[in-house]
Image (cartoon, helix red, strand yellow):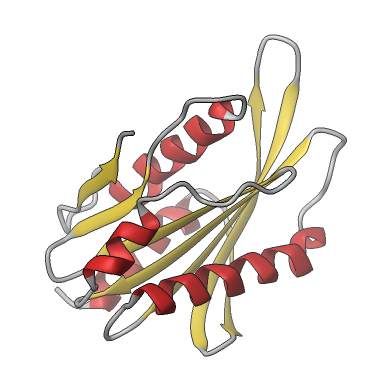
Length: 175
């Protein structure tokens, strides 16, 4: 399957759920950006989850490529967070997804490690191996911010894995 089949199918999900979609050039990558404000209720509060998904494609992904792409995506989200409404209890989520048929082992290992911590900003680098239909990501949800990481995992399952016709499997770390 080609990279564009994966991209179209994933972003069809975003379009069907009323995400705002735009094409941008971020750094060296031509990407599609999806963004939406979502709400998550808990016992004592309702948090606004401002979700940004930056998706690009590459012929080959190294650790340096995904690391640079993730940092560039995060910088984009920080600069453009005002495009979504903000409440007192708002949290930013940044998914940086690179789709490629060739992904080096170091790049896979890098995305399966815990992403850096930021205040009220959660990032989740993702790699989709379009040759093997495999998604690589971090999955651990323990700790003080576990509810936010659980929310990230729910979104990964819903939008990037779920019932995609291209049959994507998900590989992740559990420690």
